[in-house]
Structure formats: C-alpha cells, structure tokens
Amino acid sequence: MDPVTNERRRIGLSSTPEGKWTAEHGKWTKRKFRFTRNDWMGYLFSAPLIIGVIVFAIYPMIAALFMSFHQTSGLNLSGTWVGLSNYRYALEDSLFWQALTNTFVMGIWSVMLGIALSFVLASLINNLKWHLGRNFFKAVYFLPNVVSGVATSLLFSFLFFPSKEGLINFVIGLFGIDPVGWFTNPEVARYSIVLMSLWGALGYNTIIFLAGLQSVPRDLYEAAEVDGAGTYRKWWYITIPYLRPIFVFMLIMGTIGGMKRFTDVWLIGGTAGNPGGSLMTVVLYIYRNAFLSSQMGLATAVSYLLFVIILILTVFLMLLNRRKDSLD
Image 1 (spheres, one colour):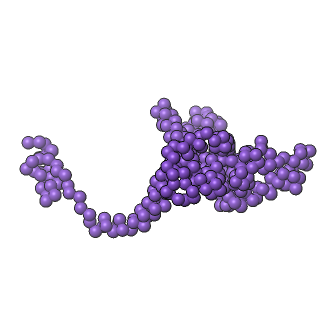
Image 2 (cartoon, one colour):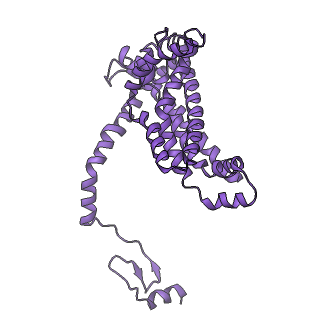
Image 3 (cartoon, one colour):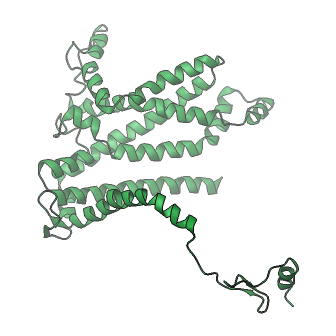
C-alpha cells in the first residue's frame, strides 16, 4: 500500500461526508465549499467598502473608457460614436505634446532633485549625535508637507514676485542681480515650479529615507571600519545599496506624482498654463478640455493616454530594478 496512505491512517485521518480523505480509495477528493456564518458577516462588513470601490472607482473607469470613443457634450454618455478619433486628435494636437514635454521636464527635475536632496538631508540628520537635534530637524523639514498645495502656491507667488518687491528678487538685488521673472518668464517658470514642489515634498522624502537609514545594520559599518573603510566609502558601498528598494519606491511614486501635476501649475499659470504655455501639463490639458470646452470624450481619451504612459514608466522602472537584482 502507498506509504502516504499508511501514514494518513496511522495518524487517524478518516473519510468525511465532504470526502476530505478517503482511506478506501487512498486519494484526496475535492471538498465542497460552504458559506459559514463568519463568512457572511465578513462580507456584510466589507460591503460598504466594496460598493464604494465599484461606484467611485471601477464604474467611473469603465464609463470614462466608453466616453473616450464618443463625441460628448458635458457628462452625457450617449454621444456620437467616433471610434479612435479622440485619441487621434490628441496625438496630432501640438498643445498636447507641449503639455507632455512640460510634464516630463518638471517631473524629471522634481524627482531627481527631490530624491538626491532628501537623501543627503536624511544622512546628515541621521549622523547627528544629539537625539533632540534629530527630532528638531525632522519636525522642521516635515512641516512644509502638512501645508496645502494652495497655501504653498500663494506663499511662493509672493516670494517669487517678479519685481523688486519680491523677497527673492530683493535679496539677489543686494548683489547687483536684476530681478528675475520667476513665474512670468517662460524659460524660468518651469524650474520655479520645481523649486516650489521641492520645498513641499522634501520633508516627506527625508523622513522615509531617515527611517531606512536607521534600519541599516550597524554590523555592516563596523565590519567596514575594520577593513579600513572611511565615511564616504561606507556611505557609497553600504548605505546606498542597502536603501535601493527605498530609492526605487521614491522614484516610482515621484514619477507617478510628477505625471499628475496640476494644482501648483493651475494656481500659478491659470488654465492657459502661462507664461506662454510653459506651465501647461497633461492634467491641465485634460481639465481645459473637460470643463472649459465641454469635450469630455477628448478629455477621457487623454486621461487613458496618460494612464498608459504612467503604466509604461512604472513597469519600466520595476523591470529595471528586477534586472539589477538578477545581476547582483
């Protein structure tokens, strides 16, 4: 007889009405699935969340996809079927490509500078010997993160006022530098938005990196010190490789957030993305078509184009990290 069967019989497994184990046939049979009282209670308590996800997430996504193939007026779903015309129009529109370029430029600078500066700040705070000093700087750098985007935009509109009355222009004027049109010069406006976004997001990134730095095993640093490694070599060969998952996380989340930029450019540049369309982003382009031109079909088509772009970038970054893991 099969040794597995003997062992099952020895420990007392016997046949059941559902056929869990049949000693006569010596094999497993499929168990019938039954809803218990606990199962029904679990689904009952989960029902509000499930209904909310269906109504406010899944249904809007399906409806938006349906609308993207129609020429609609407002939120009317029963528009004229136009197939891929909305997608074709968007891809042939120069304003869409200008918005996509601006989004990429501001997103790349925001992500790269944000990750680099927050990691350096986290490293400096982590090396402080004074415990209260760590808490003080963590609170100071995280404070801008609790300020709303609207308040941040209003604050920087005063700081970056284009004349000498602006605080930044007043300070650089003390060194003989002419006033800069931070939000009025098309060549400077995008980078001013990047600086503004850095101020708001730097604290959150710093706290995440600081948590990762405090999780690095001290044994690695002690072993490196025994081998004669200095501060820089420990930072480069131990700290950075150990925190690579956090770098990847920050890169992916920063990329997604950068591609969805809207609030700051809308408050500073308005719906036209002024000056000269330099602050026009993809989400602002969607907003203009949806709520100003009432072309909801075109807006939803561009929304799905943006979704595909974000998905491609995210998958690319994840595959790049996986390839690096395989090489290591």
